Image (cartoon, rainbow, N blue to C red; front, side):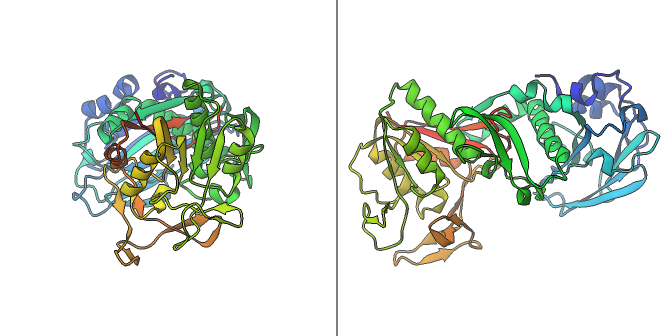
Length: 454
């Protein structure tokens, strides 16, 4: 993988970009060593802004080039109530953005939609309410946090079809600090992925739906993967719920779970396994029952309070994740796709998962997950009388068998790994996965968890 700064330089001489901070500076330190060394060597002056000059010879009218800008707020908590950044291109105010201490913002700008003239492009980031000039500029040192420009890149069709397309990344972590270190060590690769994803969306900005060609690991064939129009219009694309395969109809996270399940079964040489799915209604259950015919697969839904676990209601099996009807050590694999956030007590649910797994069994699960948070947040709870008490504003997710949706009890953080260990599992780890070829896009939000029982 080439360094992101090689991409930014567009494989041209070091004079392609001139980066200055304040009123003076030169580009050499940046082009040689990246942002951190650049900041240490720059001469700061009054006027809190960062300026990037892109010479006119780089800015052709070629529609296959896309300017990709990303802004991020790294304001130290408690240091500022807010921070303003003005994006100015060729003296025209494009946008003014106000951050709070926890805000993360991602912006993409098509090069043809910004004021490009027959001269150099000047991109100015002005911070009128900065206290110190050191509060602008990219810095790896977290003791010097501020509003910063993360990257400016020009992505081409060649880049979109380059070696990054065939990259497959699976970063395994067991705790918050380990994950952060891995992200830091691989930060250039993560920026390249973000440039790739943003340029892909910018390229197809005026198309109602986006279809991406690739290979589906679930149904094992080339396919087209859909990102729907209403998602494209959202600045923060939730890739994990998109990229639906044209054949099997499975979405991003579901396809990866199938791939992981196949890998685990192959590793254990356990093709005729017994599998329990915490769902029965929908494409995911149907796909597994149709394609894993050698396995015994049982699925279920939660149909409401007062129904005995294991009861069939109109062909749907009812189970309660807190009180499963199965005997101890019944299954080789348990699969849960975005279910655990809806259970009132995750500790009991994981203990039940552990109980019904055989020795050597595997629990594979996905959850809405905040990789920036060490601890999970309890949003609602059920009291001893069975009444739901909301600790935060109630949030509901879609439920195919209940038009009212499913209440979210937890916003999960990294302590979910420890909760699995507390439930008895010998190991639990997260996999942060990404691959354009297999249509696993959304590197910052794609996590699958694997817990094993000795």
